[in-house]
Image (cartoon, rainbow, N blue to C red; front, side, top):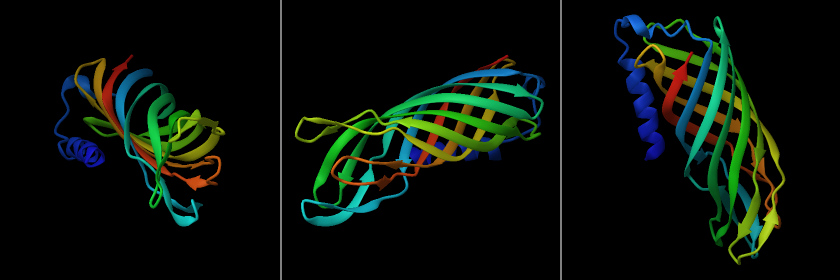
Length: 200
């Protein structure tokens, strides 16, 4: 439900493009700082044997937060961001397997489109994902290896003043996790965000 709401908000902003106010051109800024709430929805699952039963293992849909900065020159932007949330691993038969922090640090190369009100950008992303320690259902912890992920990002900014904008976007990552005793699990999260940005 949260993911649907965020997609709807972003779509509504796109559809609602009207003749731009004087401050909304959005092409004059060179640096953007933003903070946002995030929603992480794993899109993939993997069949794994747990307790003698083979069934799907999948990460949970969770809320999180992110901070980021983008440096822009002309139509090209270089963005760096940090995201944090707490993810659970669930086995379709055995149930809760454990939980771990999801902490990707990402870099994106973005191309900004010449739109009148909504400043749209899209591009490729590479992420270094620190999973932290996996806290098992029995109270013990196991280390999870950090992973590299890659994917694409779409961002939209709606200028509310010359320096402040409402920012939203979506990112898909090709990503895996290796929980001990379970094996490699494909996660492939879809991350959406909605927040505020300062542009200079």
